[in-house]
Every structure is written in structure tokens, then in C-alpha cells.
Length: 453
Ligand code: PFF
Image (tube, rainbow, N blue to C red; front, side, top):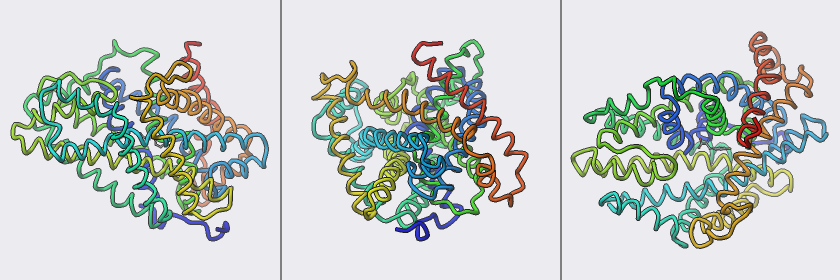
């Protein structure tokens, strides 16, 4: 497809919902609530809001600028912006990061599908030990998780294959509003439970004593991951934006949606958990072990518990799917444009590659758990390399590149839509953040996680 005929989103709403679909994912529903509870409640939320405003949104705008300016996949967009210099490598790293994440994100998204199925069949019913064994047995099974990984990748493929407007945009317009409605319904049910206020207290009670350097760094890392920054997704989606899309406004709206979904997820999980006296756990066990227990006990009426449980896992699967679509699109657009093949062939190539690596990641949780790379399982290695190495590196380099090396006129033209938006003052503030604040903060996270500061 030539540059002129390049696909684009059809409406402003499409832009916001598709990009918010990428941002809203497992990170919001399972990671944010727990981090908030553990890191000082309301204080963490305030710190997190600052991170979104001062770090997440400027980084998102930077990716918007590069993607829309290049009107092409992430690697080519960086190449165009950098005039083919060594800075192009950041784009390739972004594509690689997006691809590697999609492989293991598909595995966890597959678990969500299994839980939709299991809750629908009423299999998530029993004492806490049974629910725990269910998860452990399932995640270590050689066939079932791999099967669901393939299914979610197939669903992703079917959406991607239909193109940007008929596939990604349409799916986002359908799934995102459904997700909000489900979320609100379950939050309502959860907050009306007896002793729900204990959960609200856990989530919101400001506890200054828990605030230390780690809390700031956790908030920074979470804001990055949650907003899908530094993995090629935002840049790729921005290449489908129209020249009239207001980039800073869109980033702001997406940041706000992403934050509110995370907050609502907390309002869903904690009141329900505390009302049955269950201490919320972290990581996979919160979603796949604690919550099934909570759902079956919290709502008194077993039918209500059953309905909430099915709806919750549908919600979770949709959030995961819209993020997975954006991850898949990074590599699909890359293959399509760099190899010069059709969208369908590119999408098949990416799907098959993700399936193979996804199944390997899935097996590394059970049958192949003794296969270690750098002392970690394959799944954990992927998580580490992408989340701890590539993500901060790509984010840091993108800020340095855009803030210090790209002529400010190009950046400003994109930021202000060729001067039509009259947001020149905001531009100077943005530039200040991208030149100094963002790179320094990202460098801190990077060095801190290796114990270097
Ligand atoms: N932002 C997604 C979440 O919060 O779960 C995860 C994600 C999606 C990360 C897409 C990166 C990405 F490129």
C-alpha cells in the first residue's frame, strides 16, 4: 500500500478508544489495585497521577509525534524522523519489544479465556484449596494453556486481518464501551457488599509511612507499562491518526481513561475481598485464585456470584485482547511495510511466530519449567528482558532523541498541528519534560532496579 492510501482511523472516537484499548489491560486490572494497596493507598494514587502527567503523557505525545510524522510502522517512522541515522535503531528495538511482549502477554490472556470458560461451566466453585489447585494444575498443564494461547491469538488475527478501520477500530468501539459498562456494574455490586468500606480504606487510606524511593519508582514503572509506552504500540497507532488529531489532548484523554479504569478495578476488587475477609494477594494469584474465592462467597446468592464471576473474566479477557491487538499490530505493520507484503500475509506470519513462542512460554510454566535462560524460566526471561531492559531503554532513548536531536520545528509542527492549535506555551512545557524530567526519571528506574542507586 502506498503512503497515500495508507489506512487510518475513521473518527476521533476511534482514535481514543483504540489507543485506550491498548493502554487498558491486565496492568490496570490486576497490577495497579494491588500496588496501590501496598504502597500507601491514596498517597500512591497521588504519586501515580504525577507520574502519568509528568512522564506518561509526555512520552505518549513523543510517540504520537514520531508515529504520525512517519505515517508508517515504528521502525520506519524512527528512520524517517532520524534521517536514517543510528537513532533508527530505537524503532527496531521498539518493534522487537512489542513482538516479544505479545508472545507472553498472549499466554496470560489465554488464562483469562480459560477462566471465562471455567466460570461459565461453574468449575470455579469449591473451597480455597480446590481453587488454588485448579490454577496450579491448569497453568502447569502442557495442553490447556497452550490451547487458549492459540485461541486468543487466532481471535487477535481475525481482528487484525480486517484492517485498521474495520478490524481494530470496530473491535475497540465494541469492546471498550462494553468493558466500561461491565466494570461499572461489578464495581456497583462490589461496593454495596457489607463491610465494603474496609476495602475502600485499604485502597484509599493515605499511609505516608509506606512512602519511600521504591514507591516512586514503582509508580513510574507502572505508569509506563499501563500506558503501553516504549513498545511500538503507541507509535504504530499514531501512524493511523489524521493530521488534524490533537496529539496532546488525545494523550491526556487516554491517560485519564487509563487511570480511571485502574482505579475502578481497585474499587471492584478490594471491597469484595475485604467483605469476605480475604486478604488480597499479588500477581497471578490475585486474579486467578483469590478472586474466584471472593466471587463465590461475597454475593450471598450463588447465582449472583456466578454471574459476577463470568462477567469479570469476560471483562478481563476483553481488556487483554484490546492490548494484544495493539501489540500484534506493531509487528504486522512492520512486516507488511518492510517486507512489502500484504496485510493478511504479514498478520499470518506474526500470528504463527507468536503462537510458536507463546506455546514455548506457556510450557515453561509447567513441563519445561526446568529449562532456564540466565537462571530464569523462559516466561520470566521474556518478562525481564522486555519490562526491565528494553522498556526503559527505548523510553529513555526516545526522549533523548526527540528532545535533543530532532529539530524542534518538526516536533512543534506535529504538536501544534502546524500552528493551528495555538498550544505553543504548552509545547515549551512539554519540551522541558521530554528533554530533562523524563530521561532523568527513567534513568533512575533503570539504575535502581539493578541496585545501582
Ligand atoms: N498497557 C497494557 C496493560 O496495562 O496491561 C499492557 C501493554 C499493552 C503494554 C501494549 C505494552 C503494550 F505495548
